[in-house]
Length: 345
Image 1 (cartoon, rainbow, N blue to C red):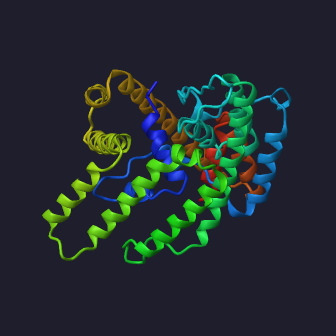
Image 2: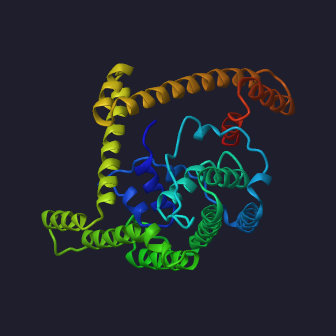
């Protein structure tokens, strides 16, 4: 399996309101696809229902939770590799990894309900913990989701980028103040540094970097030197994550160029193996094959759908025929993706 530790770190940074999202959007470092960018958010209109569902799951005994359906497509053949532990007194040992475990399942919100996602997390916690540690972990899950719901209210704050594509430092600082206040509201003084200190350090770095970018008294060389000095002050884990994300972005761009130039699967494999290792290159080759097969099936579906459109049937009969075609050609977990295409025609 591809190690997801650094991607999950970046996901946690972005999903908890960190300015890491600014870095991910900054052209100088690229914008690698991460779990964070595909994770579904809770719409403001659904917040009360989400809170009710969260509380309901928290109050249920583990053995009384409803049976789980098969894993959604995005979680198949993947693992979070998070191992949780308790101390000698049976209390949960705090680690940022627990948030990574939460996010691993919450990234599937676009494929299954919040109730099912929370059910999966609760069962995973129960498989690793017991007693007081389990209850503490489940309470942390409840508070973490409430925190994420509360983050949704920040959409009313001023935009962090103006119409000319420039970052508004005042808006960024206001947003970060609000995020910190929410963190302090939902997490204890002992939890906060474990979960968010690195993010606070990185946010401070990003604000300083943006200020340097707007400093007209510096030339390009001086600015780059100042930014390099700031980077040396970052925690080692974040510097490694930045380096890995940048490396993987460069690899992604190179692979895409090679594909456009007609490179073979073996050539792509060799390049990926050099950068990521044999195991990751094998996994990515499998994803390429799955993607190619999916595109082939979609192309076949589009041909059959076009024939229906030209068949002379009434609009209602055409709609029924297309729905039947989707049911025949795709598995239940695949159909929502195809049906979504219909909404944009």
